[in-house]
Amino acid sequence: MSSHYESAAQTLKDKVRLVQDFPEEGILFEDLTPVLADPEAFRTVVDGLAAACEELGADMIGGLDARGFLLGSAVAYKMGLGILAIRKKGKLPPPVYTEEYELEYGSAALEIPASGVDIKGKRVVLVDDVLATGGTLHGAKLLLESAGAEVAGNVVVLEVKGLNGRERLSGPPLIVLNATD
Image (cartoon, rainbow, N blue to C red; front, top):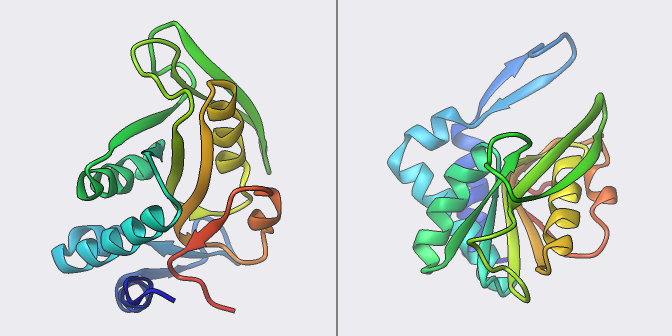
């Protein structure tokens, strides 16, 4: 395990705010706000994410709407790469590539520009804050593949255990900074 991963995991353990029974009873919410607001903690997490993206051979970073934009942008900057903002449906002017996908409570759609950004043949690593059911990351993978890119991997800060999100992400590798058994 990379020392960057270990440092990030410890930082997350120290800085993530745990909120019981939010957004509903029985759920433990892991709030990343204190991590993002602390310059040293933010840097440590970005370093861990960047090490993972480098390990996966990224040509470009794909940041998922919305916290994936924050994290992915910092990672792309650190690595000297571009960032592709993967948006929720209706946020971009046409033409766009669109991919609808299923969530645990319904469906949603993601979009990227169909012109002005050439991702054909690029190895894109998807960056997001939390892996829950895996629906959004899976939808992003299908979207990028339909546009001609290869998804080289998925990198997330936190994983919600018990929702089986990693099972939905067949194919590209998954790296979770707070990985615990």
